[in-house]
Amino acid sequence: MSIIVRCTACGAKNRIKEDSKKPPVCGKCKTPIIIQQNVSPIHLSDADFDNFIRNSHKPVLVDFWAQWCAPCRLMSPVLDSFAKSQGSIVVAKLDTDHNPLTSSRFQIFSIPTLILFDEGKEAKRMSGAMNLQQLESLLKPWITIN
Image: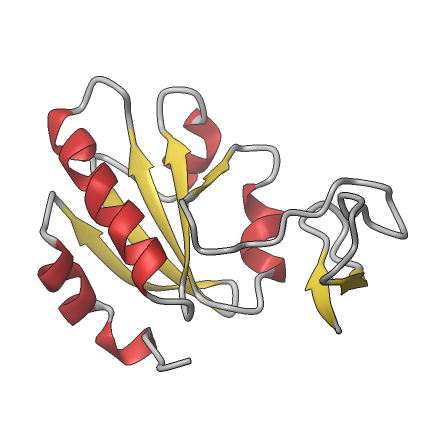
């Protein structure tokens, strides 16, 4: 059995065998391919943010956060649980201190700020810490049963 995965670096579609013992790489640019298993959030940077959002075949929930932010640390286990509990939304994190270009472009003035991107465009923005039930309620239109 194989799956089709887009490369986050160049956008090329790659057929990946699920039973392969070797880590997958893009056939076009040779970048390692990350297969989202919804185990934990993916860490993004200014360098890979746009390609990841644009090439995701699922909606992407991005947590704009910082290490020093107490509410951000409270959200971390909530986002971990959310990522594990469903497969219809990819969960990612972007550290605002280390990635100021993307944070500035999306006008992140308070953290934590969560932005849901659907088909590469901002679809929903939420600010502040919340529990898992609140997060699921706000994202209900994008959560599908697998």
